[in-house]
Length: 126
Image (cartoon, rainbow, N blue to C red; front, top):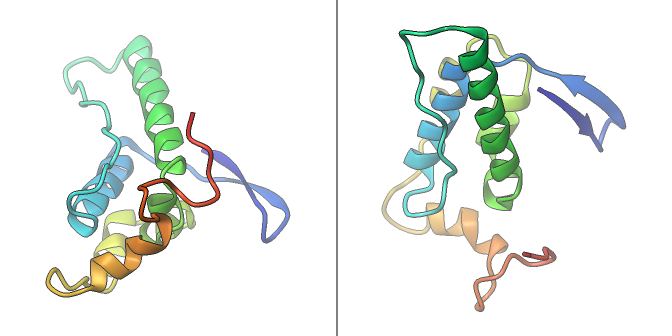
């Protein structure tokens, strides 16, 4: 995965495996209940041919682009952990502070991204 860091004004590259994308998605689902989280492709274990790997890479790129279109995901603590150079992503994600499922913890995290009309502030949705 390649990207550009605006803060550091530099490009970066991070290598991630399928299980890392899956772990990120599961973390998003757990920490953002009821909100849209893009799907990841199912892993075909029986066939690791070049064609299957290219298809998986293509669909994981779609997942990545979909995540970056959701500001509540892209600007999240989970996303920052994913793009960091940590070796064991699952451990790093599980080490994030627990969210309170009751009360306003989750609501407070997502409220800045929505206004009363349901649009993303400052974003154009086509």
